[in-house]
Image (cartoon, rainbow, N blue to C red; front, side, top):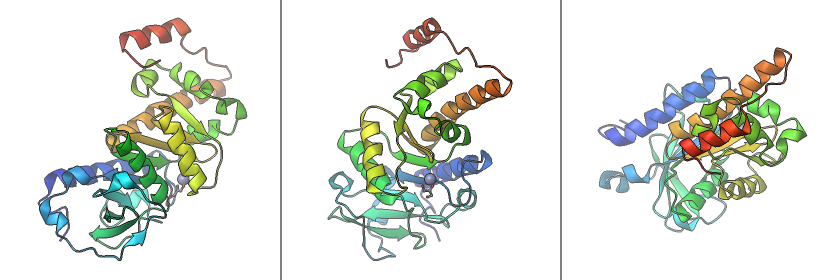
Length: 269
Ligand code: 2HA
Ligand code: ZN
């Protein structure tokens, strides 16, 4: 028995997470237990689910997140592998609900699998998104190779230097990652400082944020859309590195070509 049985719309969301987890592994962005995913699934919750007993005690989030009252999430399990989640999402992640004090969560199904080590930062981001009325429901942390490599050079960490370079590699990148790439300087993984800095960058209007020498954090309406934004940005980083390894600095699209694209696609900035 699974909570997904006879719940088609919920199952579709969870299997979309599994599909993305498979892509992360195939791309080499998810070594060992690398990366994490959380999806706000509250809109798919029915009365039957609301009546279910929790299968864990209430555990502290570590902070109070008032906008998460009544919210439910699918979370990748801590220490679980994306490549395993791709085959069996309910054996490598779990469905949790936030308790009414907005300070604890309890696991509801299918198995008592403890959520990702980055749960407090993921939940803080979801709380922020709901607070500002955003339609975004999914957050993704992953280790995309070329983007992480570029974050080892301080010149790419200055505001919007990397955004402009990546946008200029291929027109699709600005069209499909129109808010560019925010930058957060190196901080300890799972720390509150990293969560706060990530929210600050998202608040500056980035959907994808680079964590220097670590990975990216992306938010969007669903997990496939969050993945797509990271994928187009990383594709540009890969094109840049291919040109450099052929021995030349790529020209990049001209400012006039970028402006035309911005106007025709009605993109921000
Ligand atoms: O959860 O990637 O940064 C595994 C990680 C933490
Ligand atoms: Zn990581």
